[in-house]
Image (cartoon, rainbow, N blue to C red):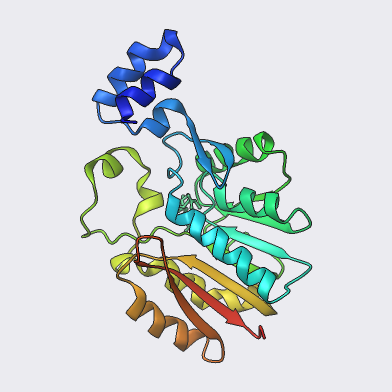
Length: 240
Ligand SMILES: C[S@@+](CC[C@H](N)C(=O)[O-])C[C@H]1O[C@@H](n2cnc3c(N)ncnc32)[C@H](O)[C@@H]1O
């Protein structure tokens, strides 16, 4: 179904004219309807948060597989840069016993994430934080889909014009947030732990080098998304 037909089908009759005008004005349909399905759950979205992507469902799915395979229990999960809350809330839905903390540098994003936690009837500890600045304690899972687009990279118009730049761009050609998380993570990780990241499709080589420097004794694994692009990085610390 094309966007036009979809909007006609899902808009309230009284909103249809305004919604069609927004679509013609180049706004993503997800912001117009204010709703996205992610991993079978409903999420409110607006232009304060990144629109959850299919690729990120893959990050959640593969993370769940690792947690089951390595029998990680007493889960304390930290989602850095939670945006709409899609990763943190989905993990809590799938792993109800886990303690889930979710952080973001954006107050506006955290408001949306909190609304989504209520909508999905889960309890999450939301923290306003620039990476680890306001984070305390240790976790056995740190997961993140950080901003990873370099300032010089080409990005589709609809994305640049509508989605929040703090959700998209990072310094150092997009590597800055990974570098900062790698540098600080050990202090916040249990001995047996998993780091899980979404990555840009051309970032594997440099990330492998960076991760190996910071985690020389860990298993460093890259995985592909459904389109066959390198999309996920997992760092397994003392998991056998
Ligand atoms: C690519 S979006 C991911 C949002 C959501 N986790 C998802 O997968 O759809 C990155 C998120 O990281 C947040 N962010 C950017 N810089 C940050 C920082 N220094 N500390 C914490 N969060 C940050 C942004 O506000 C944004 O919500």
